[in-house]
Amino acid sequence: MGDRISPDQVGEEGNMLTTDLLIIGAGPAGASLACFLASHGKKGLLLASAPGTSPTPRAHITNLAGLETLRDIGLEEQCLSLATPSTNMKHTRWCRSLAGEEYARVYSWGHDPIYKGAYEAASPCKHVDLPQTLLEPVLVRKATEGGWGVRFSTRLLKVKQLDEGVEVEVRDEILKRGYKIRCRYLFGCDGARSQVVREVGLPLIKKPGQGLALNVLVRADLTHLMEPHRVGNLHWVFKPEEGIDGREAPAWGWAAIVRMVKPWTEWMFIFLAKPGMDLKGEEMEATEEEYLARVKEVIGDESVEAELVHASKWWINEVVAERYQEGYVFCLGDAVHRHPPFNGLGSNTCLQDAFNLAWKVSYVLDGRASPGLLDSYSLERQPVGVDIITRANDGLRDHIPWQQTLGMLSPDPAERAKILAEFESATPEGRKRRREFRKGIERTTTEFHGLGIEMNQNYSHSPAVYLDDETGPGPAVPEDKVRTHVVTTYPGRRLPHVWVNTRIPAKNMKSTIDLAGHGKFCLLTGFGGGRWKEAAKSVGEKLGLQINSYSIGWHQDYEDVYFDWAKKREVEEDGCVLVRPDRFVAWRAKEMVEDAEGKLEEVLRRILGRPREA
Image 1 (cartoon, rainbow, N blue to C red):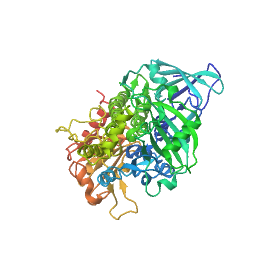
Image 2: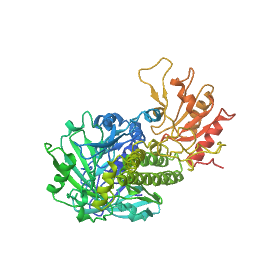
Image 3: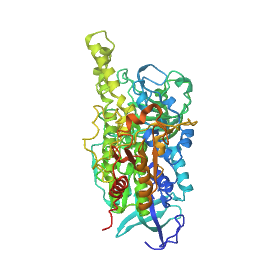
Image 4: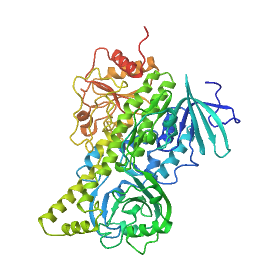
């Protein structure tokens, strides 16, 4: 690969910069990947074409799975200090204006009493609202503290695969000059218009898009409207009578989803075009005065002063790459899965892509795993991408039924007037329409209570999981895959969260989530499982791995608080559960075996692609 030079050095034009790891894109995927790699002691170079971190708060919901990845590298507390807490995310509302009459509301993000217990049992983390404008600087700073060089205003021009590694051409837009970089691995994290994806020719599965939407970022103090009666971070605002009363809504502003950015003074007005109108980009544009006029109508309180900060358009996509890897190039985040923000899955999936990939790259670079381990990245994460782009678009489509009941999808004002009159009538037709409206609203709750889609990632088909000792078919698929979290230690599934403590209770309990992770394999056993711990130590020394091992149960390293581990471990006391560095179960033994050391070594060699020497 040539002589090594520091990742924060750039030679004269025509010289070659050389680094093991090169990330293109400094959004949630790229910046978090740099952080996760840095937590393994790996350094590299992070480039972005933008002049800095995101100026607009696009992604914002941080869910349990996403926050767990940040918790692993010590960023949770800092993120929580910046985020809007879960209490301000209590409701999603449907209303005529923010100040006006309300049509409906639902609990959201784990606040529904029916689902609250499931959320608390799933993770030590809680949903928070952390806009991209706040998350990205935290990640970039953490990456630089970990030794990563970061260069903004640097545009990727070309990618060339080599026999071993990748060569890229980039252009520094500040110095107005180009240079080349050779790296062992290239990571494409450059968003929905990914140049890396185009350069390496990753095939994309594209479904028909659902048009354009318009983001209008506004500063307006709405505290008097939100507290205490309208607390929530999402508000659907629409006026079904518009067009009937002679006042037509602008084509770009038929309805609005008003999203809290900063309680309660900064807001994103997401305007949706009229149904059936395939608007072009220029038709979604208006003057600042026109945008603000519509914003004030949506607010519904003439006393409120509003300041327009930024306006931008975005496509409602349903796109996923067929695979995430091509040679020495790996792509992740929005580069390989593009979808609307429904269910709040975007940045969380970016974080999890990066968390999955980082430990594998680290182990390969250190020689603790064969390069074949990296093939499991696409095999594991691409099906997740398919699921999340489908769910996000289904989340948008789930809003169609309630719109139909109000006549909002009809272009004919006379027909809408008839439907609204029926809605208000004490007739069988009116009763049916109101019932269908309620059902339509209830249907949308899969967007706000999607614990299953957030937490049920399944890697059981991956070669980085050992299934030889499993005799059954695996966990049953729940009837409601979106809402229901499958809690299991089946290999390829997320390690269950359980609170544990010491025999003399310490001040703070620990989660099994915290025992695992941190770049290491972890083995959990119980009473009578001492030989598993001995095996973890000896096999770890033999393979050059650090395997943390803990016994949970009566008079063990940790006590089974509430006996939850006994209920969730699905193995006997003297069995064991082996957990990968990304906290997914790699293998489990239902009980002690005669040759614990030999078995554990066999499992780890298989997972890491390190067969015994002949």
